[in-house]
Length: 346
Image (cartoon, rainbow, N blue to C red):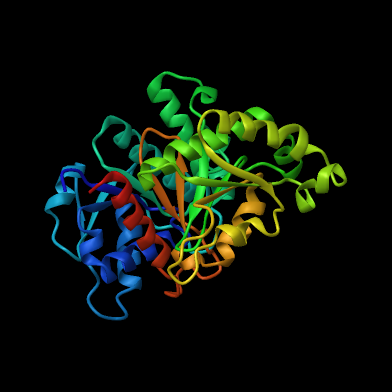
């Protein structure tokens, strides 16, 4: 490895620190060359939590990402962000915890944009805690929007000039969303020809780079039965189909719009057999994420498409209800680290 991978600590009151410690414990080769961006006391508490009464994994503080490349296996390299502080109480909303989570993401994003690290993997943050953290972090609904703002500022561009999309993927299914963290009413308003076309173009370019070929893209309709020829709504006819036609004219492999209740089955890979499509473009958050999460949270990975950096994340939240109990499963984080290595070619 020529560059390290940063893992942001997530909300200290949630399971992020615990799954990080478990990842280092369970997969020393996969996590070698990675380092944690966050808080020393919080990570030491997590290391102790997962030690099962034995010797906890050592936590080594580092000053630069390059030092992580020299850290031995089963040692947790930690780059401190902000002033050291006592760990947050498990399972409770806390403004300071939200602030630390956000500061860790900003530090890692800026390091990636400078080219100091190969990729960043983000442990879960809590959106309510982020809102409590105060300006400037409270202005962002989640990781995706925070990273988009950092990338746009680094490039000296407006947010509109740095469009991003969320892709969730597991072994069975990939889904890209037209809109992300907005209300359902706003999500419906976001289904415009420009937004659908932009989503198709970002999906084609980003997934094409991953697959090494043009992806086969299926498009979900907005309405039941994809509008049934206009009986249940005309968005498919007036908005989605014209955007798809424009994408096809540009050489994209785009099919649909399909009924939302069947398109995911067409794209699903089964028993080692590829699905009919490589990815589904869904019109809004829950339409796309319910099927992919149902197929397996433990292997799901969130990838932000459209950024000039590699960012992956586990496909679950902070799980305040089990934080501090030792029950958290690191499988999705391990899948996110594996994906980050693949995307950054290290």
